[in-house]
Image (cartoon, rainbow, N blue to C red; front, top):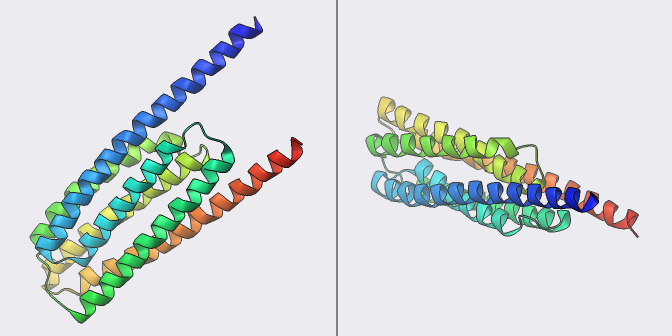
Length: 213
């Protein structure tokens, strides 16, 4: 009887991990596609906020790839990879900061029509990703950090859309830069949250390891 219970548990874990892999693969592909679309639209529209969103999508794609790699791994391994995810978010924030400074020195008026279309497509893709990852938001640090990225993408999507509307209304480039600065702050805050959760998981894993000795 005990053998049967063990088999059932193994099957349940395998099925759960298969669902996680399938979900992460889908959101990974979506973010790679939106990264290409956003960077192309940013180049065409001369938009800092679109470029910020594109860099965020690339960072998210890398994050989801890392999450895929450690499904089924130990708590300590997941926590360490989560630290790397926080580093990726921080790197995206630094890249956004650099291009904001560059845009200030090279001002231009973005094309709000291109911004708006790209922003709507990006927001729709982000909503799909968030819906797929929401069931895992309270799970282990691996999937929780992936959900954190998806939630940030919703704020980013609305922010870039707002930038397009404001650029069209005012006929000026400052709303685009303003939204890029807001996204920079959001990325920094998210990186701190992921770092905090990762360190807590590492301490918990060390506690479990110590108690097992």
